[in-house]
Image (tube, rainbow, N blue to C red; front, side, top):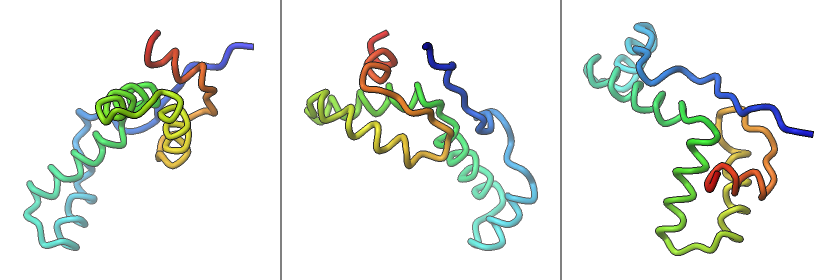
Length: 101
């Protein structure tokens, strides 16, 4: 049975952060509002990755660190569990298909 396509419900990177959040971060950190907005936008972009984007990016990073694929698949599966997006359970085969097509 085929798995449903992966989805991400995070805010789009181009979305401006909510003004009330910018005010809160600026007030709680002492950052100027434009800096607080930039930090929030960066965090939203970081967590706005889809599961596929995350897997591809991390696989590339880990290969550059000379890790073997057998170790990478195990690590990626653990990391996906800890990510704030709703990632379905992916088999090693599905992880490989995301990376290699």
